[in-house]
Amino acid sequence: MNLDYLKSLEKKYHHKRYILTDPIKYCYYFNEPQNVELVGLMIALFAYGNIKAMFRFMDNLIKILQPNPYEKILNFRENSNIDLYYRFQNKNDIKNIIITLKKFFINNNIKNYLLNKKVNNIYEIIDPFIREIQDYIPKKFLSDGLKHYFCLGNQNSVLKRYCLFFRWMIRKDFPDLGIYDFFEPKILVYPIDTHILNFAYKNQIIKSKISSRKNVLIITNYFCQFDPNDPVKYDFYITRELMLKNSFLYENIL
Figure (cartoon, rainbow, N blue to C red):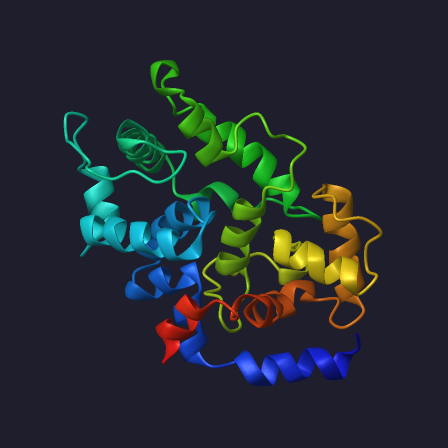
């Protein structure tokens, strides 16, 4: 693999229509930074599983949150019913996720929470952020579904969904949104999933397909040779190349 190959992927997939094949598309439904931030976090943490089922669930979630997700979440009542579920999260989990986010956002703004933090690596943000979120989950709500959603008890995991969220918020270039402009993209790491692991292994970037922080850093450091200030620049383009064999995704851009 060389820079020419990566640039060919960039040229091929650097088009707005390909945003429709990625969960980031839901962030583009909104203009206000607080809505983009909230929707981005909610959607990124649901970004797992079969993509067709995932989009179907996300479509229904966004319908509930429109037109102003921030207001909807902050005005959400604990006795409300949410007729939604998704894989590891049942209806009560979805409701309690919203309640947890309401409690967090009443007391915080993620952007303000992160301001003035000096870090070398995005995990230095993510790890304490997860601990902060956990403080807002009442113990009676702490189900397996909530633990999975917020990635609780996974201190050494790659935390792909949080890495994805912060890529969306920090990078200023396509397809990302750049609303956390006080961080530089060089602190980001690859949000590795099966696609990136297989790609990295096939191209001899890593020696095993183990999903580990060690491999995350090896992959990220490898791409630093192409752009040390923005190592995850090619994440979106590489994953489009690997994922667009899925006919459902093609239907989304035709």
